[in-house]
Amino acid sequence: MSRRIHFYKSFEEQKNAEIKATLAMLPMERIRLAVQLTKKVYGKNKNKICKSKRITFVKTN
Image (cartoon, rainbow, N blue to C red; front, top):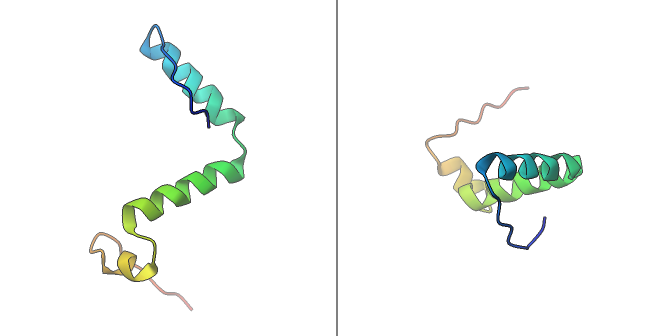
């Protein structure tokens, strides 16, 4: 992920650049970023996640 500031002439140009960057990323990198975002949103340990009323965990045998 680039840490540079880019100025685009249109939203379409920005969206195309975003799509190209996403496609260039390795699948494991995308998964890592998704997990990182999930941890930021729901907390770092499972106890905080389980206390959330928006998530229901179902255990199967």
